[in-house]
Image (cartoon, rainbow, N blue to C red; front, top):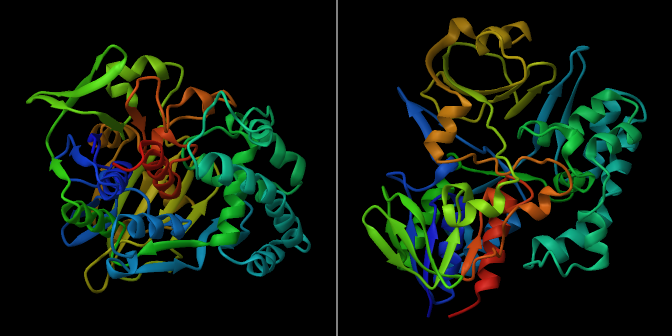
Length: 433
């Protein structure tokens, strides 16, 4: 039995702790905030509540595997709800398309409404990633990988010079399809000229597996995992600031905190490694992806009927999410903004045809700095700066013996599926007690 210390109580840390405890290790989780959950914790005020981070996710099998491998099936803890329309995209020329998940036929029909023949072009683009998904899933996403010992097929993907911007311009003459395909990465703050083309596999995952959310809000996922840690007898210490790792002769022996050192045989870094001097030097060439400007709105009276997520393309790009919880007769929206935000977000929204200024009864503003300070780092992980980024990031192993990395900074994407998979990789690398 190893003494395992998990640094960080976000989704990556919770998932890592649950898996390792089920494998028989003695696990302690340290979290700087007073509560667990990270970006899964809800914002709330005056009877309204909003998901602070993700509102839905792809690949529900990742969550099901986590709960099954750490105890009871997820269906006994949470209600996972399919999301029929992942997002509606509205373009500056007045046209729009709703992107369904989990159905090739539905996507053909949706894009054909945007323009004759566009449905076939879209699904042909998605199908072009089938081989990439197979190679990445087997060699990179579902088993610990060694950057110095890659299969020829995997190395061909990870080391490719092709970027997503160039691939989309070559594939689609219609700019609107390029905007839809690139949106997941633009929304996370990336420049498509720096994103590897193979990450377009996200479109394949959307079509093949669909999206889901948690009834009552994604905070329910964090609460269920917190209960799972209690069942697995994980020691949880909140309001505990970790200052560094204690390393002797190249191997970790403890985690340093303001209250004293916590002895460890294994450490899982589930936070931005820049926060730990022992690891910071290994990621000095990377940068965090900056969160968007966020406004949470409590609305009363009649407001426009929108799907769970509406993307208003342009500069600035605005994303409206409507899945918040509100009192009877009210609505809870969250608006994300990226680009040239030279005016109040509500005015920018009104200029795009969604004027709800007269209906606002509650408002919570969060700047990118606010979010980074609240969570102790960016929940969007590492900024893509070209193909080298994949090797400059840590995880699941690190150069320090006994130290592993999970969470958004240890994955090729910031979404819950990638983060959940990173925890599974750490559990495989550490192994059973």
